[in-house]
Image (cartoon, rainbow, N blue to C red; front, side, top):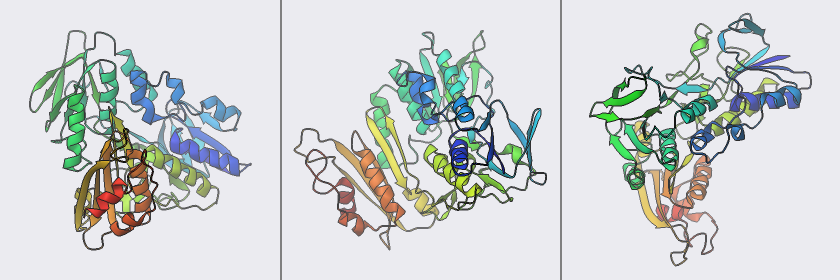
Length: 438
């Protein structure tokens, strides 16, 4: 059986490893458009600051390991430009490869608007190791001010890491606030943290273009509100699935361009599967296919796609929308639905919010944590939650994500048997205190 996988990162190589481990006769070919296999894209902002010291530290397995140890025909610089489902072939510049079963794991690419001056030097996006290395090459002493376009997760992480380098950082965000996925009361803490660390915020503004100096490097950013002098720009306004090459295949795509897959990661075309950032993910709370491009989902979907391709049927159970990040001294996390998302789905919802302690209030290690729960006003089913604080955020969001997976109510949250000792918690966990406040 000939298995072909397009894409050599999280989803693609998770699938490849399941195939070779469970089918001794499998012929696995992986076509990667770049030169790096299986690397941690989420670690790229930390490479910029030197928190991660070397790019190779982000590589889980290099291409030679896949070739020599696992017998995978792992190819680099093989960009696929078309798929022929009738002939069962994939093609690119100078190559054509037949398949019996195909996995599309091409990921996503940064959204880059057609702004004036986008071709100037020192304007970057951040999605790959070469992207990060390119930014680092431009971060010399002459670059004193960096402008980040976009206030999402990547934009915030990049802002933090460049501030650690001593750069003056400005964030331009189209929304009126940072962290638009958070409730307004929660996002205010994010903005306060940015200001506290000297990050300038330009909110409610849209970029219209760039101008350059005599060397062809970016010099100013023009927005709907003002002109900003800068030495380097990083555009981080989101990603779009790498699915353009599938035109004419009959593969069904979502409105955002992601490949629609069923629970077994099958596309609408026989023998073609998809996983990771180029595919949809079933959202257990929304009860619809969604597009949430995260490394956790890519690894899970890829692993299951590999098993399904060899006939070991294992459905993907879906996601609840959990995310966490560090931003200077704070940890920001959320899971499930925001009130805006719940209202868009016509769920009657309410919010309960508290500011409590991560441990017994009298303990010297106690820190404040902001907790917020979104719940169904009629059934009291918990729909989502958000947490911001210096410590203890990761514990709370993971407890709640588990609870959301099983559709618990606010009363059931109160009844959870959670751990308690003064250094770690109060007798009522912040999640439970928030549930009790409804």
